[in-house]
Length: 233
Image (tube, rainbow, N blue to C red; front, side, top):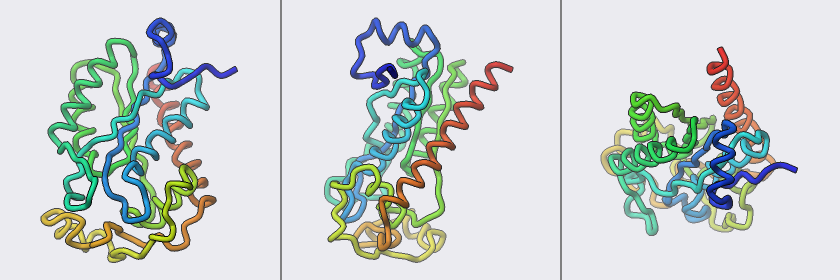
């Protein structure tokens, strides 16, 4: 029987023993931000949790922390419900979380699925590693539309189909992201897409999403395997 892997479900003696045996702590890092009129604000967090749990289900040496569901989402300001703590606060949160986690665990992995968190995650990991902590990050990437379009809709249809309001799905701004970036950086998503969608959800299926989850899960597992190999060398 596979041991439980959700950190929050365990008591401290169990965690102590798992950590002493070499367990890795995976921390899902997402966001609470708009994903169009058809996807929940938890989309990025749901994807991060899914990847971490898939990793733990395939490796008994992985525990999954409760997700970090807030991050740097200022570009989505103006859409109801978006909760952003900004870059500096995200970096500080992850740095302090990492310091605390490394008091118990020898290895810590941030799995970040929100693009706006890229810089804070990198800076936090760099600082923690400079402090001689064994911390790494994984940020999945895929070819597809940038935000709340076909790719993320397919992922959510595979992960939480009942949370997808397909009847509200509409095409957003489908221009290439490189053309939108200047205005996005200065004025935010709302300036280029009143619906909050960058791309077109049309055609998204749970099968497509499930296939992508499998690809991303394998990429994450490979990174962890390489981590083990590097340590053993």
